[in-house]
Image (cartoon, rainbow, N blue to C red):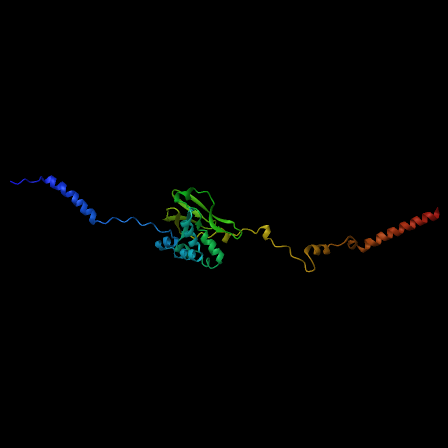
Length: 249
């Protein structure tokens, strides 16, 4: 009777060979591809309901500024993105009444030059400065209030809730809005400062000061004719009296 190998030994000799063959046939899994640069346009396009905001981001070049900053600096950003319905619900003619500079200010009023998580927005110190500024460089600001995991944002003239976080990873946070944050500076402009006050109007024949001086009567011209007669008569009477006293003496 031929000597037979025990079955366990046969299995032990086959397993290493099977392992070697499996490793040789299965290709090495590729390393995960590095993520590309952040693109605010691609982020919003993927959601499919921000076409108007994308249009203004493109026309104003604000979208390119956002991409450049979050990809080439350590400074994060937060974008509050109004949906197409938000723009559609604006009062008729609102956008048409804005000049080119105001349209840029409107879009920049939805961009905050700092990364904020949803929890950050519930406790942030107000007002929060946006990228928008006035004609003299004065910053536009937003006010955030949080209550029971709900955050409201106000531009001073518009108040709305912050809903869905479209993107929440640093360095860029993007949140959905159902209203457009029209700056209060557009609807309630500040009173002009003393520097903006118009200069006093000049009179036709000189300055206003000259006109005032010309209109003020001189002491001589203000004396009435009857008063002049009484004064001259009194002086004449005094002279006559002195003359008579000298004659009698």
